[in-house]
Image (cartoon, rainbow, N blue to C red):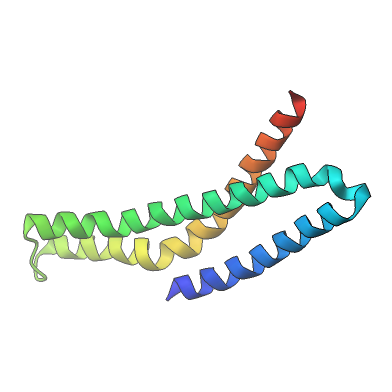
Amino acid sequence: MPYFVVLTYLVIALLAWGSVIALCASVPRWRGALHYAWRMLAGSLAGLVLANLASIAVGGIPILIGLAAGVEPADPAAQVVAAFALFGFFLGPLLASPLGFLGGALLGLHRAWDARAE
């Protein structure tokens, strides 16, 4: 369920980034910002994907460990596995997606500054 929310905002953000990149490419005065814009877009997408993979790992790895260990539903450890699954699959994407997107954009901006300095 949270991925429907995340994907909606991802599409909105991609359309916004795409329009900014198109404006930077078409307006001669803004062409200097094109170098920063595409690197920020690439970084934000990479950050979003990595953050969501980490969120899925937080939810999925305890389930796999519980299955391998033979944890039964009545076992007290099943509550711990369920808590990790709840956090990793439902709350994690809502927290990790914006943080990964913004963190990746900041990393892309930093990389663009470093590339311009050289």
